[in-house]
Length: 437
Image (cartoon, rainbow, N blue to C red; front, side, top):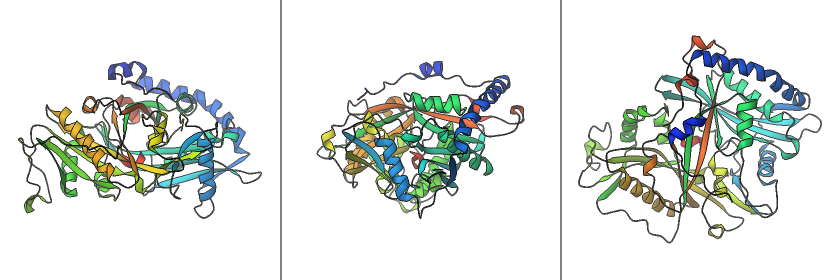
């Protein structure tokens, strides 16, 4: 198992990230894209006469897609392996969005399914206005049918669907050390590194008591109060969802809490007048956070016959690669078992004493996880410029991995006719949407 990747400074990260800063650079970038087009088309041509790309059929494809995805994850060596149990719902990661699609690649000669990809559409806000973006998730190609252009054809097809539905930019993600995915996105599909993030994860110990200091309180907000507070605070992010109310009201979101020092006080959450509406009073140091319960949507599954391997899933996030870097004894989870995790999201803090508060937030989440059915982990993800990054507890049982977001413009306009998101530079402080994690 590889050692966890150590954190590096934002300035170090910028040495490898070269944002587009001028229209001239953007034109050169587009010219380079044209140069790649012939190479890309040649690869796609290898598959176009052999493969049919069609929409997923829930009546006939569920079982086959499940087997395909397990094969992609488990096709390696012998031993023990971990894969995502979608609980008979391959659309679980994109179902939250009104506009979503799942495409499959089917061989023409024998109708075998050999590839799959998912896409969804969302609206986000940035410091330069709003954007309609597409998220591409879960690109998979059968191990016995790789290097045939099938992945390219799936990417082309989902991008075409996103473009037809008014998407300006597409986003996807992978871990920084995943060279194969990086080459696919940047060298062949013309994506750019747009943001670097860090994923933190810690196993939940059922026997440990996660206590809070007596001088720190954590109280739950009413959903209307949480929406009001986020509407005021999340605009400081480089990128954030514009439908925060939908996220907070989703049944998988367990709630919103505030953490603060008792002597500094907070609003009276128990009073009738403050059960709803706008929060107008905050104090010196405080942290707001939410918890998302993935256990109800999908689970991780350990299975014998294949090794505990370092997952190189090109597009799906940490839920399918946790155990490659997680400092969790294998004995903590039994073989042939399924388990989930709680995801901390929407963490925002202000004040001078955030370190103590963040430690309490983390312990609170661990304690909540002890009572959540099948939950074995606490996970969060933050951008490298998030002010709270340095306040994540320095606990030896917390694992870290660098994640990279990639973006691509689908617009057909000339660069000087639009304000390009790609010209805004790296997105260092972003809101990580729990629906896509």
